[in-house]
Length: 70
Image 1 (tube, helix red, strand yellow):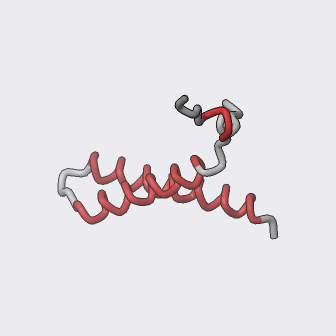
Image 2 (cartoon, one colour):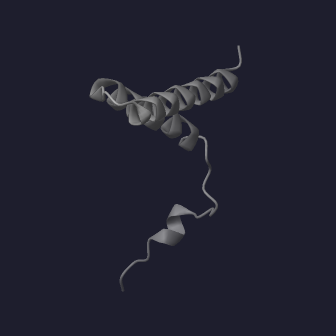
């Protein structure tokens, strides 16, 4: 099994489940705040899983970041 493929599918499923739960509960007349909360948690977890794969645009060295005081 390819770990990155499973992680991508899981993050997409979490985002869609969270979005559907939030949209359906916001549109309904009788509010269920537990479903809204779980929808928000699923959405944030999916976005976090996608964000962990994003690489930085700048490639800096740690030696250049620190300047010694003279």
